[in-house]
Amino acid sequence: MTGCCRYALRGVTVDALPPFEDRADFENTDKGFVGTAAQTKIKDAAGRVVWDLDAYDFLDAPCPGTANPSLWRQSQLAAKHGLYQVADGVYQVRGFDLSNISFIEGDRGVIVVDPLLSTECAAAALSLYREHRGDRPVSAVLYSHSHADHFGGVRGVVPDGADTPVIAPAGFLEHAVSENVYAGTAMNRRAIFMYGAELPRDATGQIGAGLGPTTSTGTISLIEPTLTVGETGQEEVIDGVRIVFQLTPGTEAPAEMNFHLPDRRVLCMAENATHNLHNVLTLRGALVRDPRVWARYLTEAIELFAADSDVLFASHHWPTWGTRELTTFLAQQRDLYAYLHDQTLRMLNQGHTGTEIAELMRLPPALERAWHTRGYYGSVSHNVKAIYQRYMGWFDGNPAHLWELPPEESARKHVEYMGGAQTVLPKARAAFEAGETRWAAQVLNYVVFADPDDTEARELLAQVYDTLGHGSENGTWRNFYLQGAAELRGDKPTNTLDTSSPDVAMALSVEQVFDSLAIRLNGPRAWDTRLTIDWNFTDLKEEVRLSLANGVLTQTRAHDGTPADLTLTLTKPQLLRVITAQTLDGVHADGDPRTFTTLIGLLDDVDRDFDIVTP
Image 1 (tube, rainbow, N blue to C red):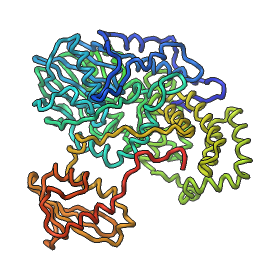
Image 2 (tube, rainbow, N blue to C red; image 1 turned 60 degrees about the vertical axis):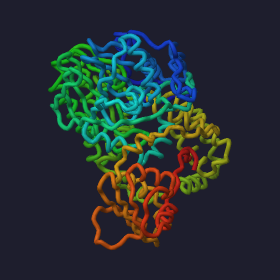
Image 3 (cartoon, rainbow, N blue to C red; image 1 turned 135 degrees about the vertical axis):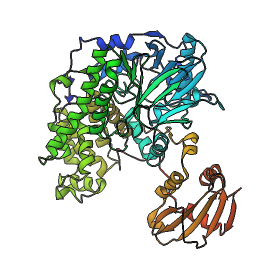
Image 4 (cartoon, rainbow, N blue to C red; image 1 turned 120 degrees about the vertical axis):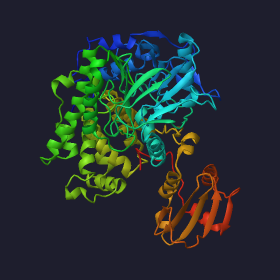
């Protein structure tokens, strides 16, 4: 299996790796180093540490037996932190969060690109930049795409009330807020597993996420864009800096763009080309991305910009210098996504399922030998399954899989058919000791789901997850396994990550606010309830009717003139307070206010800490 290592009980078998003697990435990571922060603990207003620059110092050592050597190498590179010069007037602060923050110096100030996930980390990065480059004002902010680790820290670099231009690709705001609201609770819970932010930072615990160290835990903010990039080739002059944009929707994010600085021969590839195989479907959950258009946009970037660029940088990892080198880098990244897409389609059209294709898929030798195509964040295995899902859905065509029992009931019957837990556990232990870790995990998961109070099964499964995690080349797989082991042992963290911050909530459209209510509506309890509420927004000069029938909450802007059960006159900011506080205080209401109480009473509360490794 390519994209993650093959597992062994004792030690790690590494297959088809590039030569460890190749130190070019280490040289490029160190190139342009200016300095780093003297204060290594970044804290929030309450004094809580949200990022620790010293946390990964343990990586400055030979790879131990509890880590895949390839992932250890990647983690060493990603953990390097400080201010780095990319080109004349272009700087990055790396290692202050999962992502990078970049600074492009203009005539009167500095353009900030992708201000990290947390305001505290972004402020610390800007402070480091100013320490070495002077107290330049922030003349503009540029969001390369709609993921929170590229906009969440914006209020750490833009003072309150400042009239600072904010540039973003078309569709940015819609996708930035919808991803963090519609399925945000489930994504955030799974993100704990994916990034391992709650695991200890040591050689047996979290060593990185492949794309970067991990996510910071500070304050997430959002400032709405003031300038939208709507087409490839659009050129803007910002603070005297000429920028040419390439829109790449549907690649790594639904709203994303690359950009070129033609006067400085610098190309930014956002998150479309980084030093690893990325995710076609991230393990925390998201819409399935399109590797076909991803590859085509990489081809377009080569055609538009490569020959006129001396350096390429991105929103993660380190730059690539040299026209020939960056062109090769982009071509190999392009071939990586195109090959996975095309070969998955070839094999699914031969009747193979996603799981089967994931086992059959091998990358061409030239791609396997490149460090930047390794599966540290995405993997060949789960990307192939995602491509299959994009085209074929969850069903593999086998009728036996069309209507399977749910996990808990299925597990009980599996264990019963196997002769009970007393029979299964010795066989699972033997499989584990023989190095059959994948099978041991599958069988022991049945036992745990059949009886989550079976402490022997839980501990043995935790040991299996430890072994799988310590052997994984993929950082997110490692984190999933190790977080699973921790929770099986009773160490389940409280979910502190909240991407639906006040700024994100304020950016929601009225339609998205009402969508979020519809998602929370308990359909069965609402089957027999019918009601209508008219919402008149005085600031937006619009009216929305919410109608509940058949367990569905529908919103319309035109209706037949029949009176509503309740009419509310308010502003959009009042709407957010009404929904959050579940009260009509301060809102003008005509009709029966019990209508609103009935609707609120039909909404489910969300469980931010739902179980994953147990039923």
